[in-house]
Length: 282
Image 1 (tube, rainbow, N blue to C red):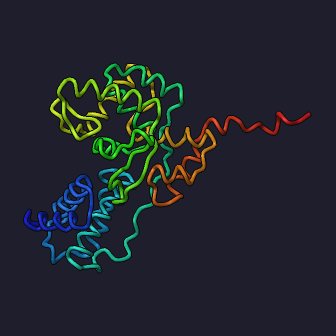
Image 2: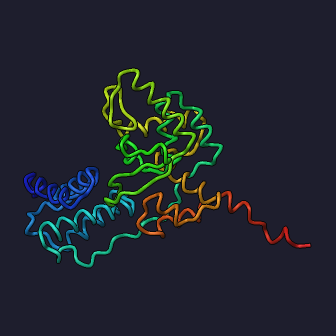
């Protein structure tokens, strides 16, 4: 069985490699669960054990391909880079990702969602994600010093993939945020963060998710609404407005254009503009 001391050393390796806190915790948990399953010592693990565990996750736990891929990534890092036992995971193919189209709100649904948010700070948070396309993890960590209100841009510091990037800000949002910030400061709330709690500390990802769940119910929207679906809506609406896909790629912080190109498949408004050939018959 794997000791907690080994897990701690594995965690340190992941920290040095630059992984996010969330990924580190997930990788450690996946490796821990693997050793619970095999009930073997580290030096006894064979390639067949990895295959058996992946099959168990798929057949017994009904795990998705994305979950299988995450487990395999964790085990590959553990055996290849941490223990230098490449042969254990060699040539094990990662499951293909299921091609699910992301949830996208219409412009009308976005309007209804924002109108359903009563608290000023909460509405500004959702508007910020929709107007800039930032990830929720980037939103909660955004600091005032990284926002240039005059230029209408903000710098996302060390976003996913440890790359800084620039995002755009809505002029309308800037004006509303400045008024909100004045009120926040008058209440004696001092914080380095763009969005904060009453004591000035940063808000959590869970807080943003809860804001959207409550707003979705209040707005009567049947679709599942998450911070990521707001980000998807940002990209899709830009594409529908005729914006260049490479610019959208840069704003979203996608390393590969292929990741951004999923939005070319989900633009319902653009599809609706296509005329059926039957209607063209005279």
